[in-house]
Length: 253
Ligand code: PGA
Figure 1 (cartoon, protein in one colour):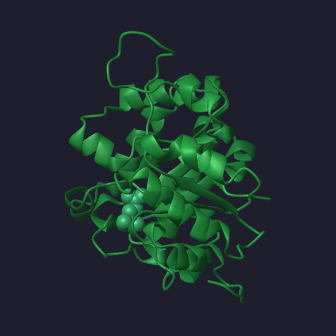
Figure 2 (cartoon, helix red, strand yellow):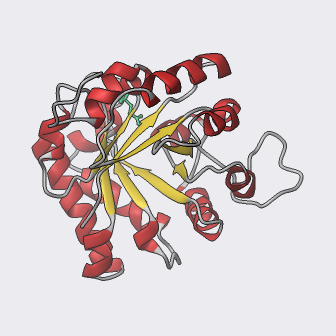
Figure 3 (cartoon, helix red, strand yellow):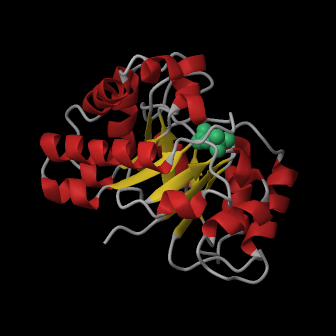
């Protein structure tokens, strides 16, 4: 049984004070117990947020990390540092990191290995650009990203995969649920080929790209989609709570 994972990626938004206010607003709402709720604030807010939600079921993830344990890597944050403050998840290879910070599949593979070694749950982001989809290359692109990311990875079932078509991120253009489902099913089949069907059946696959309270139910009704990675809509507690509580009639959201 795959437990749904509803994650919020705050990206480069919110001061520490704003982060605390947002997480308090979220924590004080009635949130579904049928899903795991995760927020990924910027590095500067992680410690304060973890202290703030000690007795809550909300989980905390980072948006990035480096693969080395420590040393002369100015400006980087290690998996051990994240672990030491209670971070449980880490987003790896988000398309914005691939696009603006030149992250390659090789680097992403190293980060994935390091996250697993340190007991962090990686959320590996994959997805094609609009150009690649228009050329009919979307499956080939995603397959190559997955094969390279999982090179020599043993504990594949611990990895969450987020399918995020680049053309749907922050654009308001959501992939149709059929497109998202077709790719998620395809991703599961790639995992079955690299590993086996048990690993493929257990791996959590999220969809990301312009997810909102208005489209969450439709997305989550797809059999191969086990959760969502939400950007913009996760910056508003009321909206994010509605996404978390999809299909439920909760007060306070
Ligand atoms: P969006 O971002 O929900 O704002 O489209 C999704 C993401 O980048 O994870």
